[in-house]
Image (cartoon, protein in one colour):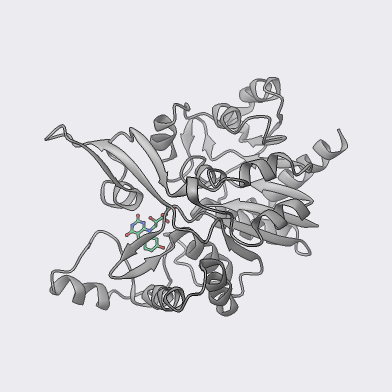
Length: 321
Ligand code: FO1
């Protein structure tokens, strides 16, 4: 079974671990979001790619869902001692090695997809991890600063990590997406997939950014195989992160049904909502998307595996319809 998964950060990575347990023989290709990427200290940092790679490769800081386990921050402290910031982005010593190797290889002319493959040679995540594009795409967020009333566009990481999404996101812009091309292997994987899954990643800044790369949304819509998503919103609130903040920026209410409608029946064939949102099933089905209410809290690996099995079951129901 060839499965393609569009993944962002923490939610996507945890779901993938469940999918591997639920379908151990599947050939899984992950199309990773790179809109969260940030250049710091002369290095290219790819948070969502690294979260998938570390989580599936066994190196993730489990409670954070990002960065490395057994981490130290001497390099960061030394940089701060020189007055070199930013201090608000917690890059650890072990994590720096990944960014140094990545930046070195990019500097030598390797595309991000080849670099990611090389990094995965070490981590062996058990999936093929392809960035959505080899071209630079960086999500920026428009905010109005409270004291000055000044409107500013800031990098997604500054909005997410430094500001903790404390200001309303007035616009979310994946800068460079329009000129970006799908990375080698992305469209082929979609064309050859038996099923395509949208894990409970952020529908705007993670999955939305991947879909913003010209050609990807169309390839999925035309793939002719079941496309099934899992709601990142449970009980009108994001399970994790601050998806509601960016959903508002694109005019989507923070509900399981609204996210399904946002993706649309042209893209989604099936949608899983949590049992607390069982009342949303009828609305999603009336939008032309098959919907089931199942437990969606990824409290542990077995819970994630159950969710993955539910998604694959719904995909087969859709296929048979
Ligand atoms: N998230 C935080 O909330 N605080 C941090 O200091 C932080 C540092 C960090 C360093 C490397 C990395 O790969 C991810 C990091 N993240 C941090 C998470 C990151 O902001 C998110 O994982 C994604 O960008 C959103 O999914």
